[in-house]
Image (cartoon, rainbow, N blue to C red; front, top):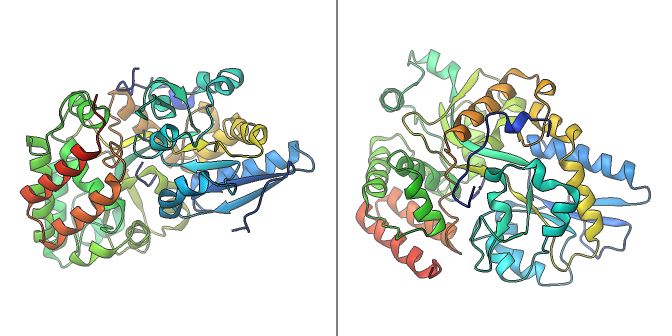
Length: 430
């Protein structure tokens, strides 16, 4: 998700078209005692993952008599900011959902805070269920760079970004649904002309920077992604792709495609504005899909970002087992259950992107489209990870600097210079 989010060598994120459908309450924290599995995650209860993991908890407790799963729901930002401190203490959970990428899971692996899952992965066959593309973000080298080295996390779903649009609002304002990039910009211009801010946005968290990264990806290729994400070359924030992205984003704010008040809005605000029928368009991830299915009362549809072979996406967030976890075997058993056909099929039908479901078991039409679009994207090697991944702390830099670009406190050229400085400071010397 959300999230800053992830995603065959390290760069080769190629999935076969049949991969995903192959046969292949808050609680008080406390120390585990062998009869309790402490689990941290940040998925909403109505999301596909939230529903699938609730079922996994019930399955786990049914197959582990006398063992209770203590689910501790944390916010994404809360885990993002406190993980290193908590995992370096005696209060570490047994199993935790964590963001993937060099600046997150990679950093924790380099700090020695995560359990090496390599042997357990081979023993339980997790590596056989996950494609090279999905598992790219599971493995990290000694520098904490994804794609090779030991297994430190296991995803049980995949994710990607897309354009969500409210078909009812398009019909109400007699605006054509977009199929091309030119049609998308024409639709935004038409909505703005009718006093409707077309794009749902959250400048205080990930949405705004993901709009900008997608604009850059529309002018980029796989080599560009490898340079930026995997340090295979020198990243230049003043190149044609980044320059186009910054200038276009600033232009969209000026034209009213992106609301000025959304500078301080969070990701939840952006999603809710779409659910409530206030915003006709949202560009965001598949992590919203299940929730929109459950809560949106209007007709809506999705499309891949038009005019771009690349978009944000990867294997899903990781299950990681902290080095200080007290019940690691229980954690491994829970991971196993989330990769079972029963849970994977449920995940697919609830609007998630499963990694080991049966094709015949996913019957919901919207779910089938979600997975079909993902197969289209992955089949063309289109998963381009997320903009905050390359260096530690870059997420906060992107949020802050993109807010400044939205308010006009930064001009596009200065914005790109600020990103370049932060990136160069944090990127490893390879």
